[in-house]
Length: 88
Image (cartoon, rainbow, N blue to C red; front, side):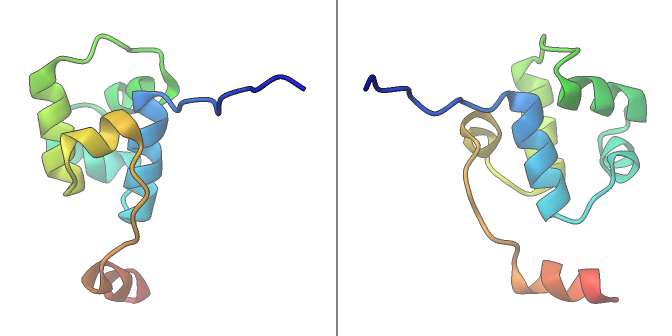
């Protein structure tokens, strides 16, 4: 039996996971970034892969996470405040 390393998620997939865990829609994230929803969608789907460091930083700020969370796909749980906000 040969070893198969786990498939790494793309930056777009990591953004999607974090966005959903934050309870945000693509439209809400786009508004926070002052970009179009189609741009957020294209990045999440992997249609746009030319993401600058400054753009990555803006995504991290809007998603209230670290840049490395987007790059590496960190696993984290939503905060108590985020859970409470979702119940409203």
